[in-house]
Structure formats: structure tokens, C-alpha cells
Length: 223
Image 1 (cartoon, helix red, strand yellow):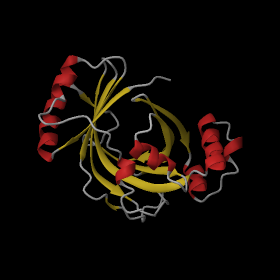
Image 2 (cartoon, rainbow, N blue to C red; image 1 turned 60 degrees about the horizontal axis):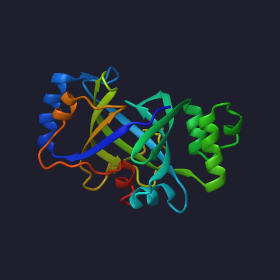
Image 3 (cartoon, rainbow, N blue to C red; image 1 turned 180 degrees about the vertical axis):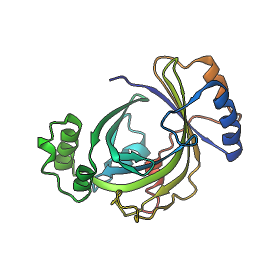
Image 4 (spheres, rainbow, N blue to C red; image 1 turned 90 degrees about the horizontal axis):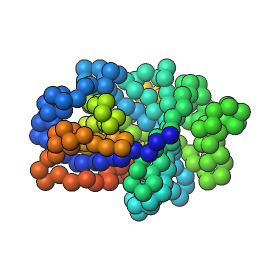
């Protein structure tokens, strides 16, 4: 497992149009993208005291969050992910779960998790039992991904961020989401040991600075 560097920038619609052209000139599109983009639906976990939410807002230096995620409305492949942050570096751990297993978690049926034999599922079960993690909110958005092999660079443009508010039945296509307030367009840049100069130059935008935007925080705007 390797921690990665990560930049986040809030950008304008005009910035997005310019970046699409510049990134396409030097980077490849993610092979999983459909027409250059994909739809992401995530279900984030938190506890009754909003531990994950508060730690993000307060800028706690060492923190983690769990989520279930699938892409392009395809529930045949669902990921359980744990995103950790330490001293500004990020680490993502992932394990596959079936639609049946994901629905069991959504329904509050956790007994099978400890016997799953999957360390990440077992870790989530431990956090469910010890600190009361529960499914909290759905986060939907559109992502345009670009990749660059040197430095293992991944650049994404995320927009149309929507929240499920109090709905956590994220496998239910009838679970309606609504725009997450005035959520901006987000440029994310992730890399391993170094960021090649060509990519650093391409993503530079005037009057644009790194920030700590969180889609989960934005989608908790209504509760």
C-alpha cells in the first residue's frame, strides 16, 4: 500500500472547458470511461456524532472514511473503500462486495461480515460495532478521468454533485438525488513520488489554489 499526493482545486466552467483540451493533448482517457466520463454513486458511512464529517471540517491530520461505490449504474461490481488521510497524503484501500452483500449492509444486517474472510469488510464491521458507523448519505457525481503513466498520475474533473439527503438505499434506482447546494466543479490531481512538469504545467490555472473540498461534506448540506 502506498500513500499518494493529492491536490484539489475548485474551478469554473470555463476552466473545465480549457482543461479538457489541454489534458487530452498530453494524457490518456481512463479505459473505463464511456464517452470520456463515468457516473459514480457512493454511499458514505458516519456515526451518530458525525465523526467523519467533523474530522474533515476540523482538518484533523489523521482521519479515515468508509464508502461503498459503483460506476455507470453497474451494480455487478461494487467496491467497499476506505480512504485514509495522514499528513496530507492519501491512501485508498478497496475490496469487492456483491450487490447482495451491499444491500445487507444497507439493511443493517452485519452478522455475516466478520466471517467474510475479507480484511476490509471485517474492519468495517469492527467500526460498525465499536463506534457505530452506519450508512449516512448517497453522493452522486460525474467524473472525467485522465491518466499519465510517469508518476502514476491521475487527473479528474468532477461535477454535477448530487446528494441523496436521508436516503441510503443506494442500489435502488428510484432513490432520488438532488443538487448538493452550490457545489463547484472539482479538479483533482493525484500522483505517487513525483508530478511530471508537463502535467504540473497543464493543470496550472490563474487564480486557482489548492483546497480541501469534500464531496461528502457538500452532500451533508441538508442534514
